[in-house]
Image (tube, rainbow, N blue to C red; front, side, top):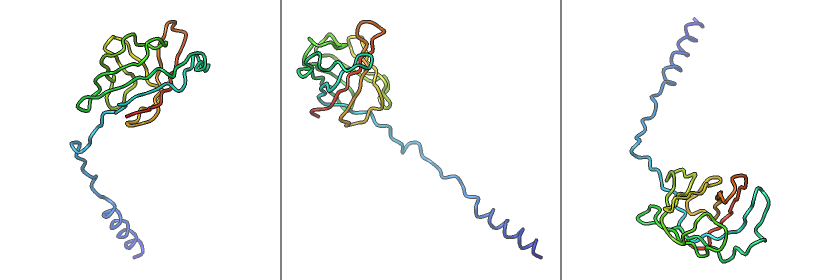
Length: 147
């Protein structure tokens, strides 16, 4: 009799523990385009891990990323005299992937790598710029000054 009750108990538990998997509607998921619009200034520059920020006056440099209809569109650089990957003061730009970007591509044909995660409306952005020799790695730490 005890075995019958025990079997009945396990049958009841197994009956109630079998729930259907919840149905997910993929149409309700929304992937957002990363938004880094605004003006960015340089807070630090490293070359191969060595801080070189004090060697040049980076205060005059700013990089403005603009969006049009929620999509990356144009950029403006305030000072082309400083070492940076771009040689044109303005143009267009885009991400390599609008949801999970790892690079910023520019209309002049160059691109810069993004170090770490990019957050929409974030205040910090680190980019890896190839300047000159391939054995030199330049990391520009940017901070947002205006939206």
